[in-house]
Length: 166
Image (tube, rainbow, N blue to C red; front, side, top):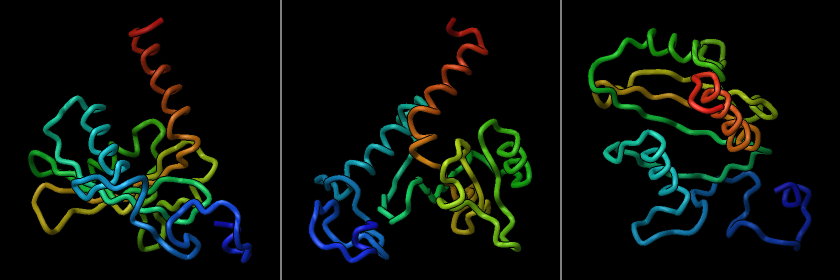
C-alpha cells in the first residue's frame, strides 16, 4: 500500500487490484458458495466460540488500506426486546471494551485510534429499524495486538481467575 502511495512500481503485488485509496471486498480465495474463505472462517469461528451451530452469521470481508486493525459492522438479533441503555452499560462494564459512542460529537471507533491498543472499541450503537429485537454496532480493534496474542493471554488469565486451570 505505501509503495503504491509513493508511486513505486514493481515489487511483490499482494492484491489483485490497487489497494491505496480503494476498498477490496475480497479477502482470501472465493469458494463455490460465493463467499471467501475469510468470510466462512468468521461464520465457523463464531459458531465454534459460542458453541452454537444454529447461530445465523453472514459477512462480507473487505480489505481497507489502514496500517492495522479490524473493523466490523455487527448486527445482533436478540430473542426479545432489549433496553439499549442496558446494552451500553453492559459493554461499558466489560473488561477490555471501550465504548466510543457520541455521534453528536463525531466520537466512534476508528482503526487509526485503535492502533497500538489492546482494547476493543465499540460504537454506533443503535436499534436496527428494519427488524425487531435487533442491534447494530461498529467494532474496531488492532488485530495484531488483540487478535491472537492478547486474546490468548486474557483467556488464560480468566481461566486462572475462575480456578479452571492452575
